[in-house]
Length: 217
Picture 1 (spheres, rainbow, N blue to C red):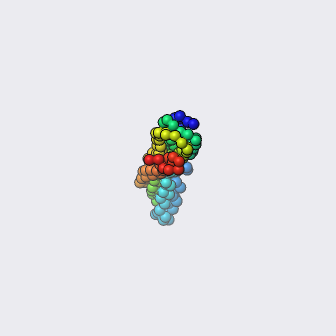
Picture 2 (tube, helix red, strand yellow):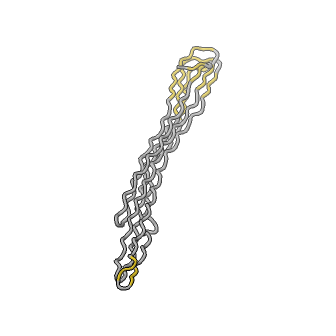
Picture 3 (spheres, rainbow, N blue to C red):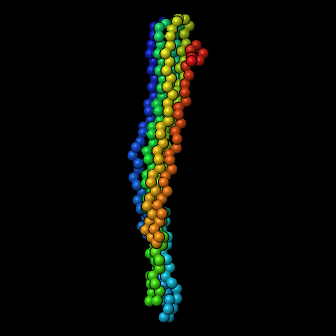
């Protein structure tokens, strides 16, 4: 025979992260290729010096760390022959953790130097600076833990019940990192695009309480 009881089962929240990863470095090699040199033809410019190569796009920022998943709660089974008094059942899985911001993109590569001048040819134009790298994707929100059902079974008695089943919620995703600055050139490169928002986590599945096989409302 049982005369009242309190049974609690709580999950653990997933870890949250707030620190963005380090900024990406500038492009390597730092400068694009050089243009071809000018070539004279007699006392005039025969072949103009070529422009430098355009700079490459900077490295994309690193993705933010995703929030951890909350832990689930196992089913609770409480079986006695006779129950009297008040019985309290509490179950709450862990919530998902929050993700961290994405990292900043790297600077675009500098445009290559123009080709060398000759006696009659001017030096070539510097290449266009590379676009800055796109920001890193924000960290995803962690998933909430799932809840196990509560099963209470008894044969005789007149018990009362206080049953609190609290569903878990997903963690918050975070924003993408800033785009990197454009590389130096003629003209300078454009700033990189903002990184994507992190993915949304999922709320945990809700549980149900059954007393002698029937759902308890």
